[in-house]
Image 1 (cartoon, one colour):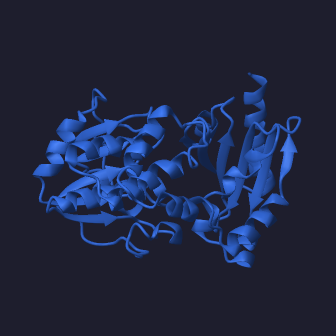
Image 2: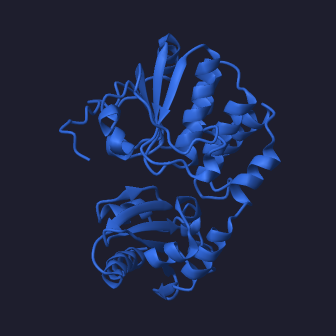
Length: 329
């Protein structure tokens, strides 16, 4: 979406301090918290955890998101699927790597008063910024910020835990660090029901997801002496199983669990005929750099891009790039 705006990138790409950001937030009476489109646990957990903290201080807080909240995360939004409304007060972007990732709220993101994020590609587009690419999740940054804003409630702690746990795959992904566990420990101490939350986030599977996983796994093809696995999810599969965004969230990690696979590419067919590609690597090659070749990006072990053409053409483009990267090891 192009609103004719120019991204106001900070010349120095220098972070404000969390103390400065906390002071700014506490001075505001009304705030709008923006989540990125296709919202995940990190962006939603950060938004609703911060909302809880600020409302405890008597602030009026609105959370906006361009796309629906999946059933898995509606416990954060009090059951609401849609996060719409009229923006008010200061604009805070959470886990939004670039304004375009705000979807229909891109214009608001371009006016952001504060940007808090953990993506290395973030251009520091806010008036105030705190970008920490060493954080496994934006939720880790929010735990540090929360200590400056007041006491954590069970609700805010559960929200921030959701942010960190989902972006680290329940602390199994390669981005997990000691800091991730330390942040989680602080949140767990607030007293929310940790076993129940983990069961809901990581051990509860809908039947549609099980059926979609089965069909998708049957499409896996291997390349480069089985170090590359490519998997396809077609529109027909989605229609047949009734699967939606919630069922698609974790499926990209499945082929990467196969012994010997270095990088897994999941191709999700779109209604316009293109394919969204999700890469998951074991860290030997940089998924973000591969996807950047096709106009995408992301992290070393999780990245994405969009490819045009037939499935065979899309698969050939990506597999060729992956083979080249493996040959350079």
